[in-house]
Image (cartoon, rainbow, N blue to C red; front, side, top):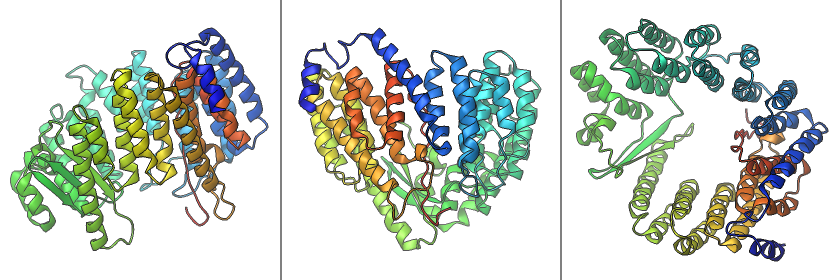
Length: 513
């Protein structure tokens, strides 16, 4: 098949698909989408929800009314999705659906949002994206009062919608009395349901506009929550590689206080010193960076990375992992420093990174960098990217990067590499599918949300970008008929120049909540 594809592509001009009639491709894409929606109707409801949302998102770019029909069908199908503590697939899906609906029919989006249960405190609230999308639509229509009224009504009891409120605050004129009311409401909500990361960003965005009293109260509440371990992100270590040297914090509370120490110093320098003095693990780091991240030069020579601390992990294990992260951070920093002048040297540094996920992300960075180079320079560099990527052992991490190489190889007019890369990416996605469908330990999440399904979507979006209409020949390599429907729809979306559809992935094995 590869030889046949190359013969077809050699007859086209430049990048694959240039010789195809764009109007014919768009017609074919719309036919695919309508056929796909019919095929989905014969699949299990748990698969229908994700597939119909995907097809609706693509269809919305040219037929909003038809998209709404598909969204309504997706919402009905979502009734069977699982919902339980720590695994609220139904609520997450309906919130994502609500974001899409808000772009077409605001009233219906609000109605859907009111039907999504608010998770208990301590669990993530998935409704933030939907509230942001609804707020964006109101603000685009110059309806600030309506946006505020809707937020007041829908946000009660859940996590404070910082993103949506930030949009409103930026739209309100300076001096508007409602600004201070929103700042007070944010503080009150944070005290009831802390989220340190979100509130930290919020304070930094608006600290100059808050009253002094509100700012000081906000920072004290933020520091208190961090010290009490409330509202923190997943426990993690933090490594900073900068010209002054590399430092690592392995205690989650130390990480958060370090990141807040500049705000704390603004409020009360003595208090900040007292808190820091009570945490021995902070002393060495603050000696180098006395105002936390604010002491670090933002000149592109500094990198900050985090590593998750798993439950039950010993201090020695955390410190050992932190040393690996520190090494990786330096290598990633070295990669970025070499990228423009010595991209092959950058790839050599990448090859020394032990963690596959970071390694692959850096390879993708080099692949996209090649897209800015003339074809004669890009082709050998992309070949090196492929060579480096082939040495990564985990297909789960590797698959998506093959798509990045393929798109840039097509741009550089290296169709052999584009096709080979896509075939390797699809082979990796098949390995992911085998793991998802393992009869001894299957992924119990909805099939449309399997990581392998989402990877096939991404790869076929990129295949359509790289090969144009000839990407269709690769569909036969997907062994699952239902997943093939979603890959074909994503390919059609690329032909229509629609954005890639939302990535919605879940994994749950037996015994895992």
